[in-house]
Amino acid sequence: MHRRNFLKSLSATVLATATGSLPALAALPKMKITRIRVYNPPHPTPLFNQSDVVVTIETDAGITGIGEGGTKDLLAPSAGRLIGRDPQYIERLWQDMNRSFFYPAGRERTDAIGALDMALWDIKGKVQNLPVHQLLGGMVRNYCECYNTAGIIPGITPGMGIKDRARLTIEAGYRAFRFGAMDLPANTTFNTRERITHLREQCADAREGVGKDGDWCIDFH
Image (tube, rainbow, N blue to C red; front, side, top):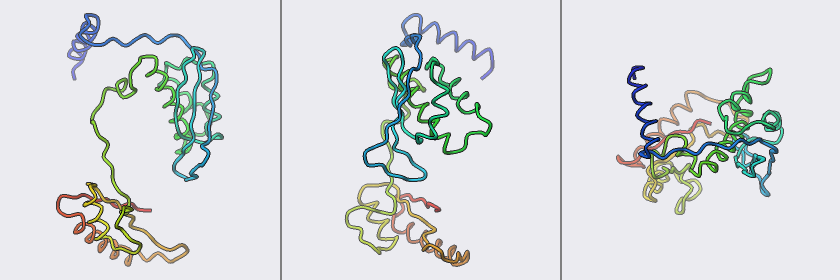
């Protein structure tokens, strides 16, 4: 978009908001972050790449935001950066949490920062009385596509082949079938030629099982 067209579009948006053609967002009240708490679930699922830790950010305005992710140790340094700050400047706070340490944030700390970021957006949504997706540009779909990993559904039995698992998964109503490609016993020698041949056979079976209208994907692990 050219600069002149952008300014015209921006002026039209401001005019539409002022005249009531578009809903105006409420001005965020001045507030400060007073406390951040971390809650571990009663029955945690300790997966190395997922977290079910709940995070809350409390403010002096009585509004609390809720997020999920990270661990207590990963959350603590970034959470300490937020105390006393205004939660409405989300991008500024994210940059501060991400850059204010000697080493750049890796995946684990980025996950923790994401939990705090989620809670900040929750605060903003509550102040504006809008769902967060509306603040981020609006809904793009009215459904959530689900897939089934390796066909863990009724009717599938241990040892059943990829073809039958894929077929039963599609017949159960799923449009996608996901399966692992590098399923090897622990402490064994990896034979590249044998694995590629095995993967080719599995892909052929999956393609036949899902049918021409189905879809499938491979999970390398």
